[in-house]
Length: 405
Image 1 (cartoon, helix red, strand yellow):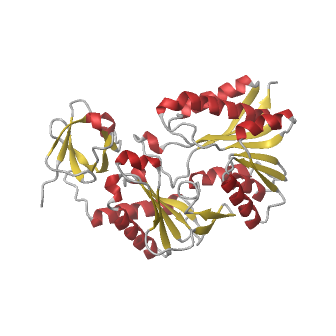
Image 2 (cartoon, helix red, strand yellow; image 1 turned 135 degrees about the vertical axis):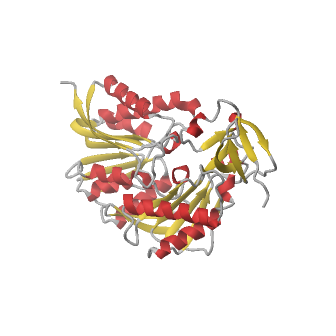
Image 3 (cartoon, helix red, strand yellow; image 1 turned 180 degrees about the vertical axis):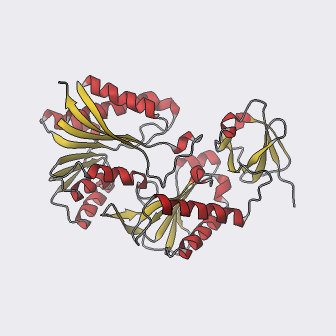
């Protein structure tokens, strides 16, 4: 067997790695000893030769090594991946509702499941795969086969797999964007059910893998506020929060999104759930619409703000803060006295502390007092790996909004 190459760290480097972090950056590596190829495996050694684990290497990326195992001399073979896949599936069975033929949940969440760069979502009897790193890309078909075997042993039958490896970050790994079937073609419009609400998910053309599963229990949390309420759902995408509000008995729901495709899918989902009379969807820019609603004197019992990530890098955080402050300020003005605001950020660069500070500034600017009802984060099928800050990205607040009194 060929001896595995070793990446030796500079003295004093690897601090996050030693705390449990999943990556080694290019500027932490002193030298690489032995032959290797990008996408292959290397041992990671501290400056003094102490072995820190095994990972995939890609010198094209600043994120040069993604760790697979911390065990000395780990053997990375089919059995290794079988254990990883089984552990990921068994974890989901314990923390989220996986029962029912139309269930949807994330089965593999990259570094947080110790399978770096790989995401797999289940929608009813379909899997959607997103491969974002060169090393894991070489194993994706093996991992998918092992996952299908694991799920089918548990009675969960999978009829098809679709790949959505079309994210821009693949370019950082020197890989092209890819999408298409892994195996036989099938109908890519799939019906799922969540919190008693039905959705048609377009795994081929929908955003990311087709549906945002991470808000599952946050959508459930707003239901108790919705009986008889007038609700505004901003950045509604395919209508998920709006439909949860309608299912919980809201008398009127308005959903807004800038995507005509998303709005059309939301209308289709409303019809699927028999709530088209309660819910109206509008294609509009939220930043332009909110001041217009304010000028008309509109008031709502609940305003929901679920925007896309306003920042995907540290360089744009200042502009993102302005965006979050603006929509929260506008949203609070539209909440009647004693009503509720549900607001979130899905960017890990917008830290919990910064997001809370931004909301507080917005409230002060419009002379509102906030009473925090709940603070939630992503659904537990998107586990947060401590020492891997990127895995903690979703912050979700529910506030009662009161006039200064």
